[in-house]
Length: 75
Image 1 (cartoon, rainbow, N blue to C red):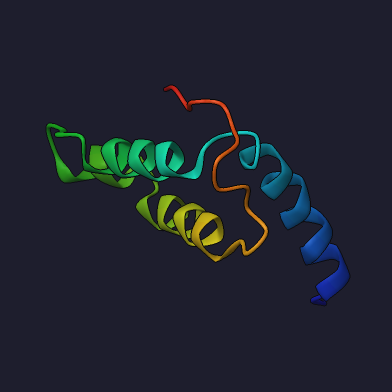
Image 2 (cartoon, rainbow, N blue to C red):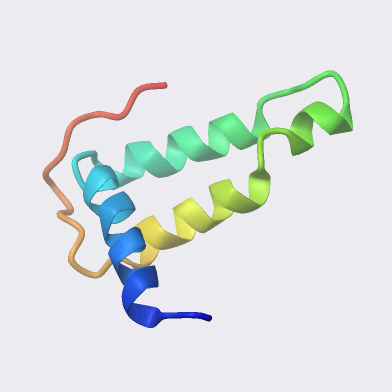
C-alpha cells in the first residue's frame, strides 16, 4: 500500500544528500553519465537512464535548493 509519508521520508534522505552539491554540477554530471558513449544498447540501459532523469527532475523541482552554495560534484 502506498504511503505518502513513507515516500516523502525516503525522498528526503536522497534530497538532503544532493543538496550538499551545487545543482548545476549535479545536472551536468548526470547528463554526462547518461550520454557517455557505450559499445551497445544493453550497456546504455545498464546506466538506468530513467533513474538519472528522475534524479535530475528532483534536483530541478526543489524550490528550496541553495542556488549559490554547495560543493562541486565529481564523478
